[in-house]
Length: 169
Image (cartoon, rainbow, N blue to C red; front, side, top):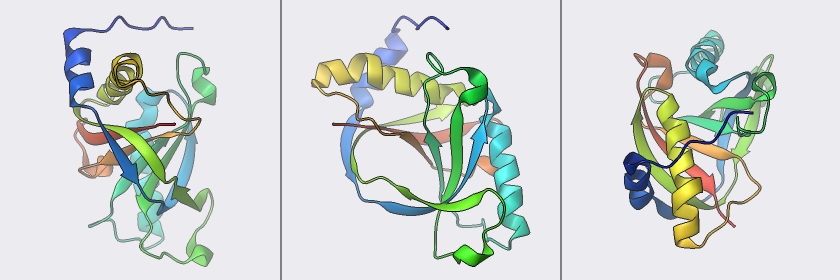
């Protein structure tokens, strides 16, 4: 099991930038992937290819990632990650293979904007969990975390602009 990092000045800066936000349920088209989080950029490429093959227009699609597992506790090969897009009403009968409809869970979330190579998402989550939650006297909910992508992850050059969301109780 990997050791947890020690909070840095950058983590403290991110914790100060974290804010609570209430979100409504959002319909999604999703595809499940397994493996370590460094594989996520490749997952987005495969997901986009699947959608394009079905005629899904990605030009204005809003990408959402769902993170179910903490790599500090889950073996790499068991980590679950869903690549999703907000569903504009894509018919269920047109979904094939591993594609499915999903709902982004409504509720209150700690939100933080991050940008950089994909590991910045984990750094953001660590900032929320290790610093913001205790300072705000909040606890995480037993719910997945989300990434709202501010630019399409399938067009990236290794850089991500994401709002990370950790569910709150």
